[in-house]
Length: 151
Image (cartoon, rainbow, N blue to C red):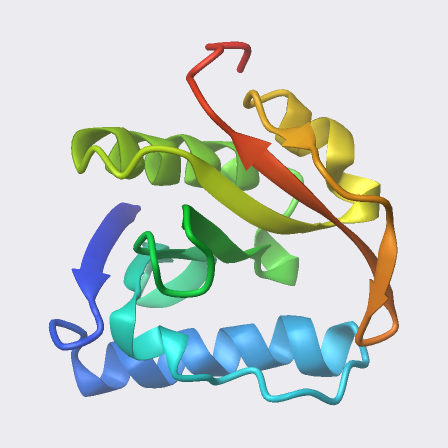
């Protein structure tokens, strides 16, 4: 089990392939959303993932302030189906928040699937928008200003 943190340019070709395949499997195939999963933000992102036996178990990307939002952003947060129920999502968010704090990126804005509101609130995020449909899934915008250490 290994947590990996890399910029786009640092990713090896096989790592990039496995990351993108895992994201497409979860967000496009499993959630049945036809949308452009790969976007220009990948090039600016810091990619955090859990690798187990050379397979991707969990993943998120961190975008710098001024890219997608004025604030930094954590997105594409996911745990691959066979690895769910083992608290890897919680550990993934701890890793992502730790990175943001170390880099002093400031506030974090996320676009969360609405059903995960309590998960994100447990890390100190709070809702800043009404629920809205995005690619057929209910989302809310949330913001994190300071560490509440409630996890």
